[in-house]
Length: 441
Image 1 (cartoon, one colour):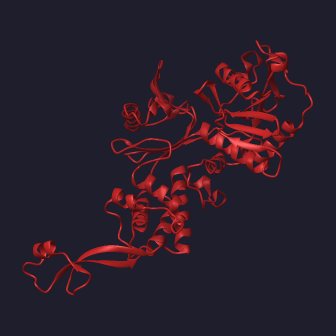
Image 2 (cartoon, helix red, strand yellow):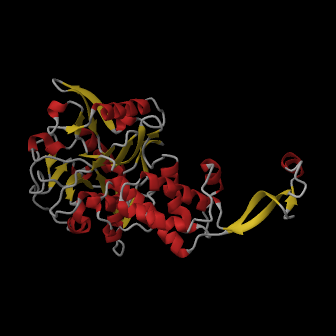
Image 3 (cartoon, rainbow, N blue to C red):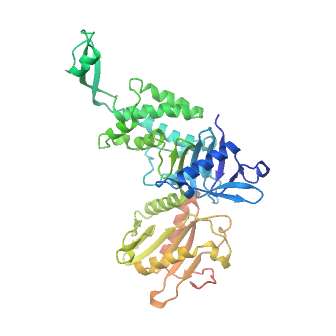
């Protein structure tokens, strides 16, 4: 069975045995493979691995690698898998892996039509095995609905006349076999590009999976592809894939096929020399998660929910302002920005809120003419007992408030329900005093 190392965001990895147990440990071979993978893709213009990891040296320890706020799975070529999980806090004891999968479903480009995270025993599966299971679920639904057939061109050396004789090939292959005809003809069946790619993916995943349940399901699926040849040219077959109303069922599974067959990913890097990675930026995942559930909760209300609004620029036609979420109700506008960062409970440090974030909120307030700005952060043990935090510019008619709200990702709808109550409650409330250049609300 392949060895899996499990870490969390911002954890440190070392190859120094003396610090095994203090930090996450990788043997020297695996540590070097991971380091080379990072350095290789730091030279790639399309993907900077230093966005995902940092390499530094610690005194008495030596070289260390620190994960950043990207979550997912890394496979090294020696078989070692590194699973990076998010730091998700909340009142419930929900499995953070299962909550992360729920969050992933909110990503716009994530293929998740049929996936049901509740049907999985995520405690027994690595994230990579979960992604394989996602593919299996898509394939099972596709097989149940029926694999699509179509006409496709076949070239073959036959003993009977069929279609059109290819004279150049006839002379080449049948010079001494006059009884044969090299022909090109149209056949109707399931041996089309999409089905060939799916079979190739299933065969590849059968070799890569270490989960008995996944392996068993893949073998059962391959029975339905017995008469279909695996793809021998991925690039050529993917170029033939056209998603329309007749092939809509193939849309999600083709995205997954690209990921697995080409070692591609949604937001990350891969390579044949040192390994491959399937990672997701938690900033984007959190933003999509909050936006999706706010839209759902406010669907039948008077609020219009706009995600990634593009209505304003900092200067004329320059530096577009794109708040994560804008709530509109008549003349009332509420600007919301999500931040995947764990705050602290220290007033003197402004609870860990960065100065650049507050500059950004001030720009939103001025350009949108809104007095109500919200920053949404994930909750944590340190902040769960804090009262609401608020900053005010205190500029008379032009004043604006920036308020902070903490979301429990495990219970997102209940948590955001409390947020909506605050938004709808217009009266002044008691907020913590913040001793900064901004006055308290």
